[in-house]
Length: 434
Image 1 (tube, rainbow, N blue to C red):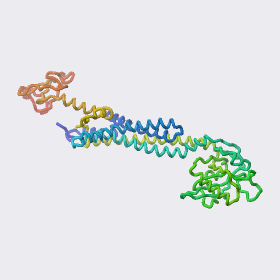
Image 2 (image 1 turned 30 degrees about the vertical axis):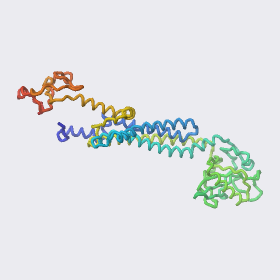
Image 3 (image 1 turned 60 degrees about the vertical axis):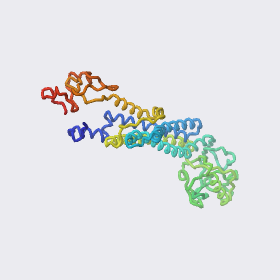
């Protein structure tokens, strides 16, 4: 007899609803399984995200290869259960309606595990490539170049410092904001302004460069108007800015070179070996900041992704519990593994295989025959018209108590089969259910 909620007392019904439809169950015994499942769903996806971030934003190729191989292994582990389920449905013809609820139940977590890993993979690819181009690659390239302190453009030509990466200029050096140039390409303005001793372009021989060339330029993208009379790139308005970080983006260098050529033609100044810098204060500090920013972004994004995935996994566990309570999904009628896929189930779907085997063992252990009568001593007897059934594997033989101490306390009776000898008000227990 299956009791509905209407047959329960108000307190029992309230307790049932609180355990099945609220987050209070997380603190209870059954909630521990939900937390474990949510953590198991979250950790591989977060680990995949970390490995891909390291692989895509690292300049050491052995680290990239190892992290990439580990990420592929995690993805393969997550794909395997879902692939085995799909193959089983196709090969074993498990698309029958009787298996539908069980298949939805057992494919719930494999499908969501795969989806979360795909989201982590996509997020790591996007952020990893961004960090590589904006932070890690410039940091690494600048680390291979030289650092010059106290450089004066009026004395040192660009030809002598072609290996410059970080440059700190003398105190009298500045940029001429009002006499720059620009070059438009693909909707972007590539702006340049000369870095000069005194901060002004000389219009005559007085104050002209001792080298006869003007090879040092501050640069930026979309930070000026063409023609460039209002250069506002980098720390242009910082009076303490005294240096530059060398341009490392080879794809944009031709456009800056054309802008420098236009400046040379406009002001009739020689430009032989132009060097392009991002105008900053404390170039060495800014260079280290590139690496620190990349690490901080990776760390913060990892914790944020882990928190989002964990909350999502807990919600998915509650949704699965709600679907099971509404009988939309169920563990009942779990199908057997198709012929030839038993080994794949043992590796990729061990929980499903174990549930199927345990359910079969329980079915084999059920007795065949009329329902027995359990008397007040906990011993079993049968109607006079039928003898004891043949026990299957796991069935209790007649006369064996069902649990230790069964003879010391009464046992309720479930079923209509009551022997005629005890079918009297004196012999029938008051707690028996007919």
